[in-house]
Length: 435
Picture (cartoon, rainbow, N blue to C red):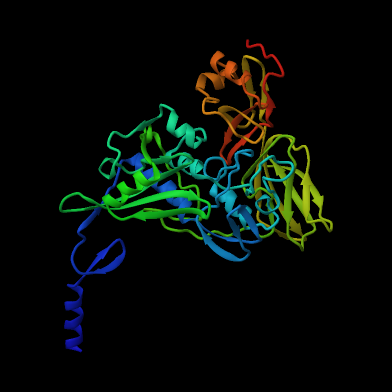
């Protein structure tokens, strides 16, 4: 017994505890760059997307290269280009809404296909997801979604002087024509500061992922071979991080259990957003007799449940809604959604906007599919929001007139559940006079 105890004490001297794990041998010869608070926030948000694990509850064709199969577990947020619907996860839709929609086999994730009517996309796409530019836009905290071309051309980004491994910092953007990625890890040799490992996070067709480049020379070769350029976001320190999700734990967080509402869910997911005039569909489970609906915390209506377990609610006025199922004395948990008032009028010189329960964030001019020029978006100021309108600059107006495609105005409105856009309004159909 004594020998066993001495052996145990001797063993303790050979181990060190690091980050909650027991490791053998010498202290680490390497150190990871910590980065600024804004960079740390960017890394956390990128890892939310790369580390998210989920189960698909029906066959899901996310894009032309990736199909998710039922009842299988996957890692990494779905790659899809929902530019027409403005439903980028992170930017527009919370992880909570996305995951509860995935858990519901009758939700828009499985029933809405962006390459089919009433949408206008040419490529297969899931209603929710992200692409490389949406990934970077969310991670860096952009107020407006930025395309790959926006990131390379606008003055909120700066081209890094030293275009090599020695010039990089955490949360720098790697840009090449048609693709962007984010540097989310830099490991150095303690003795000389040389970089031995670089982690890159990105949205890829197989799903959001992390990949590693070993050493400075390999990274520099990658830059040359891929014609990559390194950019840095000027306002990185304004980048905030809010742990929106119970579904993935990143640096400094612990995972928490989540209980899905198996009885009732809006077809866009729990805590989702609709705009006035849009049908709200409640997907119900069997075994209940009635559904109770509340608006702004007050009883709104009660509906009997028939054979159809998809209840369609038309022309709901704007407000905060919740609903639950009832059978005799038993009542289910509530499901939640909002109907957003998003009014937009467009003229030759002025775009006016109004909402009773959401805040306008930015304006863009785009085709019906959501494709927009790099110059055709504008983040609204506090003064613009207070006025309820913004004047279209002569430069933008003249360039819009030169477009051969029909251009539409979209204003993105924000509430605590996420963002919505108005029904696209064709530009130059009405003349709005500013007061």
